[in-house]
Length: 426
Image (cartoon, rainbow, N blue to C red; front, side, top):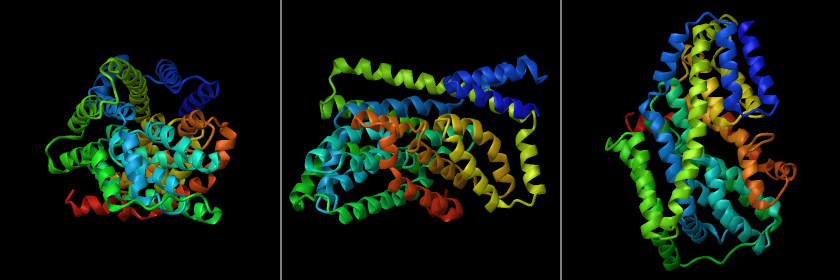
């Protein structure tokens, strides 16, 4: 009953429009001082040790790297490279958007950053070429969600911190599902473009493709540095994040020269604002999960499910439904930080691989980013496309259904997530 009161209070505060971080903090304080006898000293100690985590440092570095790349002209060069590869197929520019989102996702770690970087360049070009604005917005909104599945990924770091899992394994495990989902979104785009006879571009020559690749090589090299560095053991995911931030700064300011030195403080400030917001949510979520563990909620939930005879198939179905519902009222970071510590022990008790479970949660977060009322990608794309949320919600449905179908596949086919880590001996 006490746990039900806590979740009821949290939901009530969020429904008032209060920021999730504040709502979470007030819920934790109310619970701590009125409904539990946990000592304040132990809470303070947990607060300190909970955020004293080396892997948390990866978050501000990946945010900073993404901001440098967004403002530094990397996205535009990747779009040109993608267009040279697939622009001559049906829905050329739209397909280029999907490919460019997949490439940019592999260096940014953030879904909204991917939507902003790719969408702000390619959406006006698509409208000018004769594509319906609704079609273009649907492509970019959903393809931008690849930013949190294809590594590096900020939500994967949060999951790893919440469950003491390996960030490196999660990053490697996200590669195959990420490119499978990118292919499915591309197939949906191609089919709709072919059916409606949307514009195609002329086929680029080999020399044009080579030139586009040469101009985008500095951005693509970051993929090799981050993933190759982690797998080879050259550096940890946190060190990879720091290296990517420095590398992105050098590329944006000194190689491409699209970002002026006078603009760097503005990029640093916006990165610090976003990092501070995430770290504040993490702080409150650490306390929340500690109090839930103190009340034996995960253990009781696990035992109840086992007593009901609910196997791993039924459990994963319930997890998907729960996370999709949570995506209606919360953003991904908050969902992972609150739900992962509660659901993770149940998953382990039922024999579910922790890395597979992390990828499953990440795909759920992708879907949540693309549906109302709080889908962050919808709001970002709405600002770029100058479209209302309702109209944009209708626009994304064909691709959203594709993502839901993929969610079923990734849920019940663990090998899709675990094949590459096993192949690499991880």
